[in-house]
Length: 518
Ligand code: FAD
Ligand code: MLT
Ligand code: ZN
Picture 1 (spheres, rainbow, N blue to C red):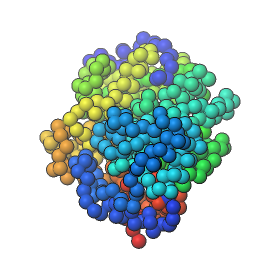
Picture 2 (cartoon, protein in one colour):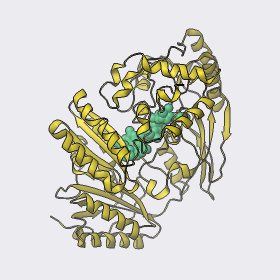
Picture 3 (cartoon, rainbow, N blue to C red):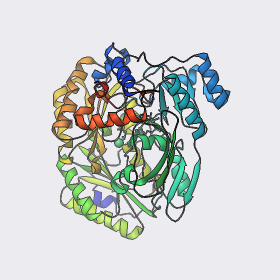
Picture 4 (cartoon, rainbow, N blue to C red):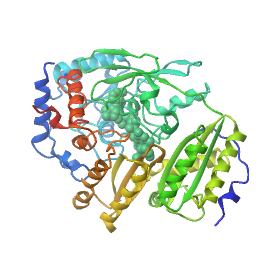
């Protein structure tokens, strides 16, 4: 095996970063009615089985030709989509697990149009789904039944950028990567980055309070989103687009439609280094994390991990990828540093890794010599989600756990499932966020019965969260009590009732039906 120490000797170059109309009782009625009448086959074995008990609420109206004519009047014919092919795409989630049957997608161009749409839908009791880039992983962005889809993709303008403060104000439909490209020209970066950056919208990011790959450095969006403009269910426009440092948001489209966002962006720093290292055991991964925080603290910008099963998955399903470590090991860690002094940053990373090698924490590793190599390292980690989609079927869990417990869950589940399925663990180790994924030839009730509620109970027992960064969506609405107290859920439901009395905004998502029962 070529040793890590030998391989990083040749110095590399600096590279760019990889790159509701009346009262609460009505809401209560249709939420509970909606959940108790029967079974939706489509969700049967995809995970979180208790959600299979949903039926369309009879309290919502059905779309008619007068509704369509009204929308055409306010939006123009071309932004009222009835075309089957486009609707098929918009009705289907990124994973192809959740599929609605909406007959209409609306493409508003500005806040006023969003307001007019919601005012009308609220008066007609037409349920809606706000949709951004449709990259969500919990079925939140697509209709459950025939909800009208309100897609924000035409609201994609940057409105203002302050080059002194780094404050960006933009419309909600801006694609994350486009914002990053724009900021790059100004010498700034987005404080969040995720594998879906080429499609997800900033409005979707804010509404899911997305975490991603830079949270360890720049924190949660709770800290960087300074303000939003949002439209509530009755069409009222709430202008909270302040540019003060502290004011927060987040609700998965169930409280309002985010139309504009102001966000604090960090400056782009000149020196970015990426190391890809192998470790034999999970305890070493934890120790490396502790050491990285101590020794690389001010320049550490990502600390991501994947296990050997995740690595095999990527190598088997994605083209043009290779493991930069010559001999395989049980765990891999991607460390990224971002700073302003290339020589200093590189020396620091090299010294850190050499020390880790000497201590036996690292079995082998390599530091990217240029931007292409760095991108290829990132591809191994960011490509896992895409590779999973190419397997027959997969169950996906997004969990927050104490770092020391993370891999115990993976091992326990592996033991439980034996040869029945392939269990993979990867995620944002630096944030204590495990992505637990189980791939299998086809969805299977028996296997699902072994996974759930085991995974949720395990997480709850260890005081973790069953929704670390992807949200609850349709998938986990009924599972919310595993990580939120009944009092918290009741409070969330009161807020929902206040802002959306008829419950038209993204029904069946986030909150359990019991939250709306007397
Ligand atoms: P959508 O999927 O369209 O919607 C998501 C939710 O937000 C829905 O409930 C929807 O109703 C609501 N919503 C969307 N836009 C608005 C709006 N303007 N106003 C109100 N509600 C709205 N997530 C992470 O947190 N971290 C990751 O690292 C990460 N990596 C990913 C990698 C891949 C390859 C993929 C496919 C997904 C990944 N995700 C990740 C999940 C997903 O990308 C995020 O949740 C993202 O923030 C969703 O943005 P979107 O615009 O696609 O929203
Ligand atoms: C990631 O970190 O890769 C994303 O959250 C997507 C996933 O969990 O697969
Ligand atoms: Zn993630």
